[in-house]
Image (cartoon, rainbow, N blue to C red; front, side, top):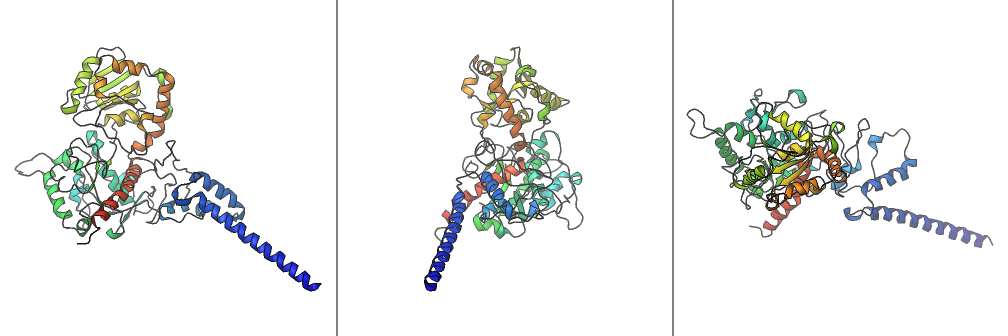
Length: 494
């Protein structure tokens, strides 16, 4: 009888053990299934919410929220997810309504980050200051390659006026410098590394747009402009570097946002990834969407705070355009539209410059208008689009060849009106189209404009989801195609 009891107890314990193990394996497999292969059955934010709340009973009450590490996020691409630093309750930007990450929505502004947290590891050449901050008049101390960027109020300022619209190289360089600077609060999108073999991309810190704007004309007895001299010296430098020779420059990033920047050597450096305003002055074999990045212009009018943005009924001007009217190439349409629209009572279509009070007038005009025209000029793009966005004036884009920043993650049709050039010049077509857009439809686009303004703001230090952050993420999305090209070309060892 005692033998039978012992067998019964053994059987019960064995069954309990089997059931416990089975339940544990079931829970474990379910957790992996929820995030299998980076294609989530539940949104990641929902998954984290469930996971945090479901496990909170096991967390000691004295554990700080900043240090909570979530299990099951071990892939390299999710290391930032695994630890979410929270500073003073500050929330990061959330996943967009477009269903894709507008930017690294799990990232917070942090005081320091390392290469394991960074979305993109970047090696930056230590070029002499004549290529970058020296063009701003900065002179470092002996053996000082870069300015001290720990204090935002003391960094070398960039020239104002229209120079600012092509200043991307400045903001990206500052951001990389700050990634190694203690106590600078910024996102962890890009991290500068000192060993090029650890890098995803090689950054070339040449202020090419500033070089063109300020130093492209011959001065005194010069036979070669400073701009052309710097370009030639850059080619000589790059093509002798082991980093360039390794993959023929394909993993290099060069900012050439002004349409005429790098004009003399772009063919020699065309294997690199460019950051551009558009492709208007580039042959397809040199620049194309497959390998290059379109970055937003830096707007020149002031950003209208959302609380101060005038709604539909308080914007008396239906259509606004102020700028150069007589342009060459694709910009000839501006002249046609001028003669079609100039006498309409609720249309402002006038010549304008940045001289005098021109920028302030343009900003006030856009902020008082329902629709702002962005018409092709000498090139397909212009700074005017981004001035309209920060003025919350619904852009009307009349530029058939335009390429837009971050269009793989931003749906511009939600806050812009696109009109083909051939339709825009038909008498009555454009005004009938815009007058047919009623208050509710316009207000929906206006609200969207206020939501997406942050993606077109350049600032130092950078903020989550701002233009600098978005550019780095756009570069990261190109890295896989860069590797693809390199791997295909390396199939047969030489």
